Every structure is written in structure tokens, then in C-alpha cells.
Length: 409
Image 1 (spheres, rainbow, N blue to C red):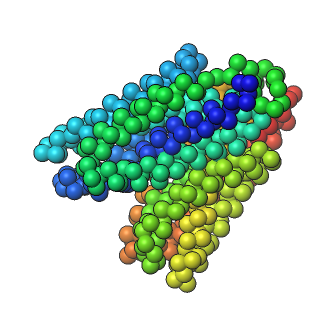
Image 2: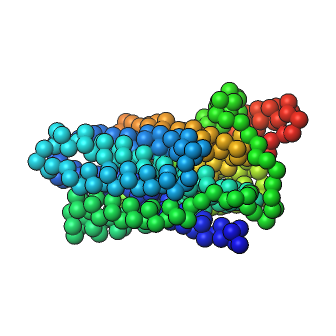
């Protein structure tokens, strides 16, 4: 009976990640804050998102460590408290005191918000994957699709609230809403008594802790691959609305990338389950190549259709990345210490979030607003991702040749 409920638990876990995915909707809040605090620069506002991503990774790592001592429900409740405190703190910022409000925004949205989201993200994914040892790719893909679409789904609600209630009251409402959903949903996130899945009871979990994983060459090459894929994706996703406008389409057209970002997580997750990590990774690289080629061709021809195809392909590529990261870490480095190992793997988001937007902004500024050089850079990163894919596969095969029991990946 418990095994039959795993899809219900997965649905609840995905719902929790949809609400946590609002952290990616910072771009929706930048303009309202800039209208209240005219003294704040664009770089100061953008720093809020960077801080939130850093503490998102720290929260994920912390959740992995806490998973050994506490039930998932306790970790998610801690996350709910962090998010409530963070969003409440943002709602209490003083419009008349911009100098003190900025560091408070960093602490409340960046530190507390990022940490809270990271706690739930790692806890939910780590726990739900134990219910789906037969479908880890699909399981991770569905949940990460919810996380990726959170900004799009809740973003429309937040936008409406800001228009009617103002930015500060909106954060109060969102904080209460997220707290209630996480608190109630935490009762459905539980570890199975025995490994679930159609395969029935399985052998004792294999795998080593981070101390061993961090000493393997495969892990570091794989993480660099994740960073490269992330950089290419963020060069587009960070400016999707601006790219659409630059080629004559409404800004909302660029936001459709979020849908394909979510779709990529499910599609490649399903491919991973039916094949292996080697195939899933090269599919991701192909998406990136296709996106770069279509974007560059569209820029040269002035074709919005080609540019749109390129945006969609880049959305698929970027979305597939976290699903591959989660599934490969679970399969190859083992499910025994997955929560903490995945928490470490999440840190690939930090350099990607810094490098991608920085390179894109610099190239666009130097080219006078044109995106051609950015699209060429995406193809360069795609070539680098292809080279790293070859290295990852060779190194894993070499490491497996030294084991009595080769690891799946």
C-alpha cells in the first residue's frame, strides 16, 4: 500500500518545489524595488540573487548533513521557518532608509530565503528518490520541473499582488502562503521503510561519502561539465525577455523558455532511465549545439522564428542539467550518501550563475546591444561540453575497470 502512495508523495514533493521555485523569480521583484529605492544600482539589486543562489547551495548541503539525524519533516519545517522569517523581514524594510534596507534585503531574501529553499530542495529530492529506485531520472525530472516552473507559476500571482497590494505586503502574503504549504506538505515527505519500486526489496545501499567522492577525477570533470552547460544556459535564460524584444517579439515570448526549462528536466530524466548517463549527457550537449546554431542563424537572418527555436533548445539544455546531476550522483557515487553528495554537487550552480550572466552582459555591451557574439560564445561552450563529456565517460570507465562491481551511471 505504501508503495502505491509514492506517486502521491511525489506530487506533494513537486508542489513544495513549485512554491520554493519562486526564489528564481527575483527578476520580477527587481523593478518594484528599484522604484522604491532609486538610490540602489542595478548591480546592487542583482547581488541579491547571487547571494540567494550561494545560500541555496549551502542550504542544500546542510540538508544533506541533517538528513542523517533528523526526519525529512523536521528539515522542511526548518525551511518553512527560514522562508517565513526571510519574507516577513523583507516586508518590514523601511522605504525611507535605503542604506539599512539593502543589507537587510541581502540577509532576508538572500541568506534566509536561499537557505530555506536549499533545505527543502535537497530534502525533498533526496527523500523522493528513495521511493523511485527504478525511475530516478523521471522522479528527479518531475520534481525539478516543478522547481523550474515555480517562478513562472507563482510569478503571475506575485505580479498581480504587487500591482494591487504593493511590494512589501506581497512579501508578507507570499511568506505566509509558502510557510503553510511547506508545513502541511512536510507530513507527506517521509522515508520508505524499505526500498520502493517495482523491483521490490533491493540489496544494501552502496556508495561512499563525500570524502571519497571528492577524491575521484570523474566527479570534478563531471562538475565542470555541469558548470559549462549551466553557463551556456544562463547566458540565454538570464536575458530571454530582452533577446525576444531585440528581435521584434513581446518580452513574454522570452519567458516561454521557463516552460522548456521544466520540460527538459522530465524529458532527459526519462531518457536517462531508459538508457544511461552517457546518453543523457550527450543529448543535453546536442540541445546546446542546436540552440546556439539556431540563435546565431536567427541573428544573422533577422528571423524571430529561428531565435525562438534557439531559445527553446537552450531551455531544454539548461533544464536537463540538474536532472542529470542528481541522477548521476545517485547512480554512480551511490544512493547511500546521496543527500550529502548531491548537496555538494549543487554548488555547480554558483560559478555558472556568476560566469554566464557576466560574459553575456559584457559581450552585449561591447557589441553595442547585438547578441551575435553571445550566441557564438554558446557554441564555444557547447564544444567544451562535448570534450568534457568524452573525458567524463572515459574516466568513469577507467574507474569502473578497477572495481570488482562496476558502478552504473
